[in-house]
Image 1: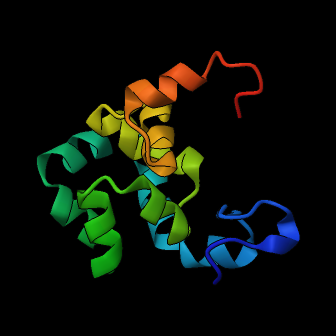
Image 2: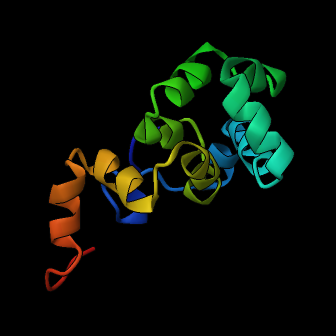
Amino acid sequence: MSPGRADWGVPDSHIFDGPRSRSGYRINKMCISLTKAANREAFKADEEGYVVKYGLNDEERRAVRERNWLRLTELGGNVYFLMKIGACVGHGLYRLGAQQRGETLDEFLATRNDKGAT
């Protein structure tokens, strides 16, 4: 899987297409399980045990542990599902976006009201 697909016209982006969806199945399945309160509590109580239960491999577990949202996206995580982890650990959408752009939260927030912000 390439880091960015030029044929999509979005260089350096990780388009959530069929192959990426299949590669991220375990991550996304685990994330969607966090819609249930009992699962969120289990995740918070024993994060490592929880991700192992969903079969995440070493690289996927490391990305969850490090809150490496960009890497989770590269591994096939869907941002809407990754938000379930973020909600459990107090990381909102803007924090995820800032990290993926290589910016601090304050730098990222400063761009949200700029004309042409994307």
